[in-house]
Image (cartoon, rainbow, N blue to C red; front, side, top):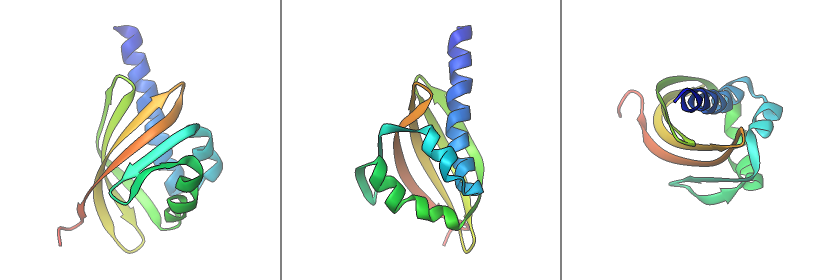
Length: 119
């Protein structure tokens, strides 16, 4: 049980660090967190690979100013994350499932929420 709890703390910290890298615009930090065999899925992206993720998604870091975490819930090798994100011109709420193996993120599934305030 103690090992499971320790593992859960580690994967939550890894997931949180990825969001913090967006806010800090720290590409090197997020590159270290994301595994070579990483995949990313959202309503706009169908299991894209690491290179496509950095080309398509990382540019969004330019406008991200913060994340307020509503849920950071570990479950085995996954962290269920609900957040309210802030960008220069908008705010939004999403939920993501972040899968971590060997201290790196190997998969992210994004489920879009809504604009804040509700519009």
